[in-house]
Image (cartoon, rainbow, N blue to C red; front, side):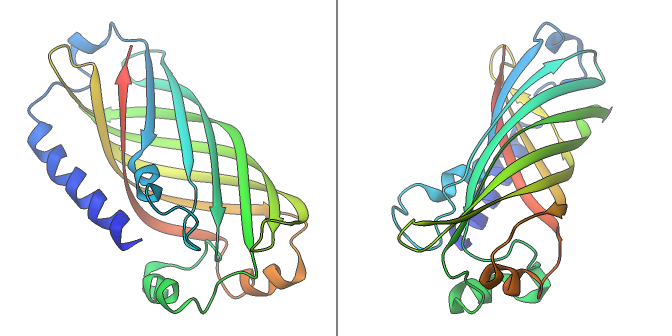
Length: 214
């Protein structure tokens, strides 16, 4: 997690340098109707191998620009949780990872295919809503399946789209997002006991997406 924060702050610094590039609201980018992107959080898993805290996070977005203001998309995501997602920063999230005090007796794998809507608000400033139905698989530490379930995961984003490169084909999107999951079924008792101690939402997660227009 600490390595991830270092990566995020590094990309944030790069985004300041890139802000002189034109944004999605300008004339030169309307020719690009599609975009492909992924969050830099996926880079935080590289080199971790079989570590207990490796979330094995993979996420991909394919979006279609309907107009200068409206963008719709499809989102695929899969990740592996080692502790409840509802532990917030001010609950001592990083300390609990270091102490392993809230670790599950195994893992929770969540995989889903969902939809998103992105609205350009002013220049590169945007707001996004994502809805991601997920299939849950509960596993022991040696990856033996315990149970299956379902979760409806939604997230809400505020960020800035910055295009760069000779033809403004590449972009980054620094953003802050929050998420919740009000539908969450068939959780095994040992996992549920930990989940009930915490919230069904997470607030103010920093992230940066990078991608290509085409």
